[in-house]
Length: 192
Image (tube, rainbow, N blue to C red; front, side):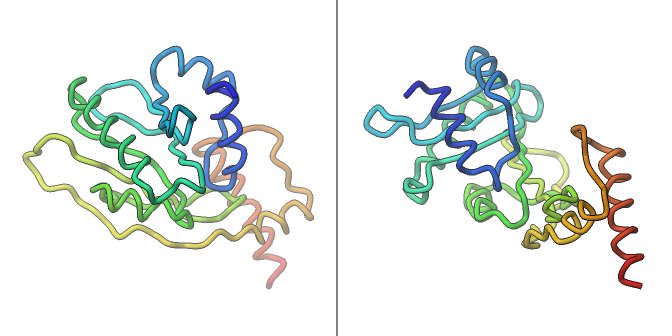
């Protein structure tokens, strides 16, 4: 199995925990050296897909095979990425993680702190924890918060679909909030 096939397969197996990226994105990012692959006895075991090096390096996706979790492969990938970030003068590493995902404990154990919590999308209605790892000393202490552990709840989304709300395009930012508000208002009106 090629590395790209493996990454795509692992992403699909973990679809409830990961943001989806088309295989073309991984093809491009492997060529740009933005995907780190963990290997066990020469076979792929997991990966980290990260952004370009800058002041803050962003982790877009990280996943270790289920049967290999808890065996330090993820920790080793993070140590390697942290070293690369320091060499490339990045001051911090950041990522987003759904509140109901076990990986939140991993990020905390790796020294990341939760800098804020935001609302997730309407489909899962979970919170999003924003994790941050400071690599260089700062003048001011960072403001942190407790990560959310809100569980996934697709009930409002399902009711919205039954009422005819559909999402025909990929929404971000204000459009997502408007879509979410419309569905929630419709469902709340029904409850009254």
